[in-house]
Image 1 (cartoon, rainbow, N blue to C red):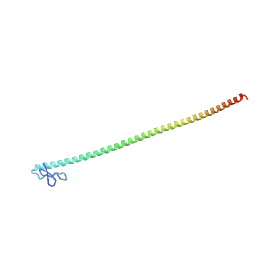
Image 2 (cartoon, rainbow, N blue to C red):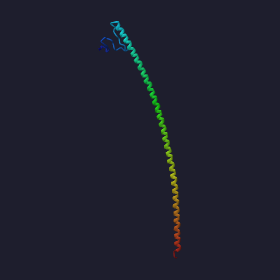
Image 3 (cartoon, rainbow, N blue to C red):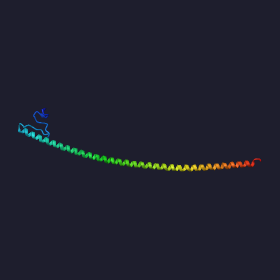
Length: 150
């Protein structure tokens, strides 16, 4: 069972101090040589396990950092590919829009030219009709003048 001393350190029933900053357990003088040997072996094994655990943790952290770096690199390459694809798609779309605009401009110009030609034709037709009507009226007036009794 653990007990807390007046100074705040924790001790178990055997009186060993658990508040050692090195993480080592101070053990009181053994009562028998075999117990001392067993405690030394246990302490050595514990130190080795702790050392092995720290080394394994360092390897895990290093592997995780390496994997994270690889993932970041892969993600950056994928982002670059996506950006390039988006740029190509945008350029294609702009090209299509420009071609469509040029087609509309060309068709509009053709329609305008056709419209101007049609207006000119109709104006000429109106002028011709007006001249024909004047001629016809003048002919009718001349006939009336020649047939009228004086």
